[in-house]
Amino acid sequence: MQELYHLIKSLDANEKKYFRRFGLKDESKGKSNTETLFEIIDALDEFDEEKIINRLKRVKLDKQISHLKTYLYELLLDTLLWYNKERIKGFDTSYESAKISLLEDRGLDEEALKLSVRLAKNTSNEGSFIEKWNALSRNIHYASNQFLSDKKNEFSELNNWVEQRGVLLAQMQRYHEYDALLVQQLRVMRKAMQARSDEDLKALNEIFNQKIVQQKKLADSRDSCFIFHTIRLHHFQIFNNWKDFFAEAKTLTEYLKKEGIEKFPMMRVLWAYSQLTQACYYTQQWKELEKYLNELKVIAVNNHTETMAQFTYYTQLAITLFDFKRNEKQLKELLHETVSHLKQFKNRLRPDVRLAITITTISAFVEYGEYETAIDVSEDFLTNYDSGIRMDALLMLYVYEFICHLEMGNMLYVNNTIQNVYRYFLRNQYKGEFESTLMHVFKKISEMQDYSQHKKEIQKLKEELDASGGNASNRQHLALLPIVQSFLDAKLANQKIHVFAAAQKKKGE
Image (cartoon, rainbow, N blue to C red; front, side):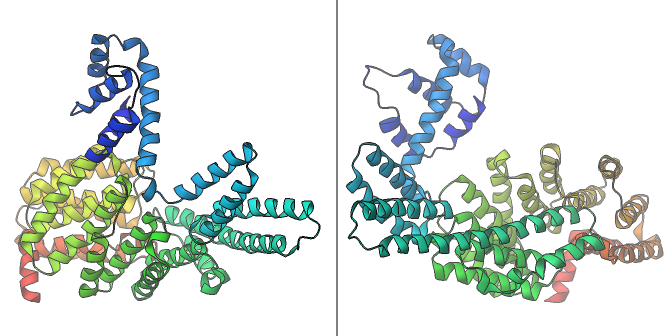
């Protein structure tokens, strides 16, 4: 029932209007049982299965609940499919294929042939591998039948279709090579985020040095080309080669524009822009970052998943951009808007994506001294979404929470945070040199009352942390280290972190 509730609540006003007019069309008099269930659920502000069942009992439909909810769910999906058919990539070709099969079943071969030729033409530019393969196979079938029934007919047409399918098969095989390498790279990356070893780095370098990853001309289809750039982007990012990362991301985005953005799955387009905006940030190209963020913000998206991806990719770096431009008013508006969106999307955002945007938001709140809001955002995540998250990213969240509690004087919560991190390490059977040093730093800082009396000790802690963070196996913590260093610098100056950050900004102007 909950899935049905979420589906109904995802409808916009126009989709509901279309569904009531066409999806719920019923020849019987009065309201149908399906419509009754739809209206009951649509009227709820929050999901409450007991309330739904009680209302169905009042209209004597409680014995039909199982059938009704299944039927309504499928009816909604079918109606939404038709309503959004213009925006669903591949819908037209799949629908045309279904029409061809229908005509064949009824013996209308000439009509089926006309549609088949048109389908092959359409899929040659827009279709997926399987759609292209099926379209070419149909035309080979028709051409073969025509040749066999008419011995005077030239064999050239059949040869042409067979040759085209041969080219497609070669492209599919090459795509499989790229895809296999990408999967291998992602497996190593996932493992490497926990503890990057020399063996992991060697494996990543071996993938990158493959011939098909070094020669773009071998990527002979749109799908292969996209993965070609994806593998290279992953590699440059892992090894912090930001100059090449920027060049690769820009090349990919320009390729998408040249080919036509509408020809690619929108999630790929949004991801490409996310890589480019990250590259602008890491290379400190602020004008370029603003330009590409503006482009990203106006890309036409088609569904909730794409809307959330666009929101995520835009928000993370727009916060950073507004901060760099010292546009405090626009930044704070975006921050609170982001918190609102995080609540709105609830469980729809993937935990890792939600974590990334949560960390970005918290860091900005901390920088402006809004420690309570930062803790609220952090607690919302830690309470609901900490399962399966990368250790380096989750540790960063704990660090920010520690800083906030310490700056607010919540010493009990400071110690609780330290214990939570220790428990997290114990649960995952992992605690490296950097993590041990970090916990040692936190513990020592929490024991200090007057920082001005402990400058030598704080300086020593900072040096210990720098030394442990410089180890090659701790590369995943490169983003975390500057945060803790800035915090320790603030303590050396006997200031709160947001006061210290504001002073540093003013000094840099």
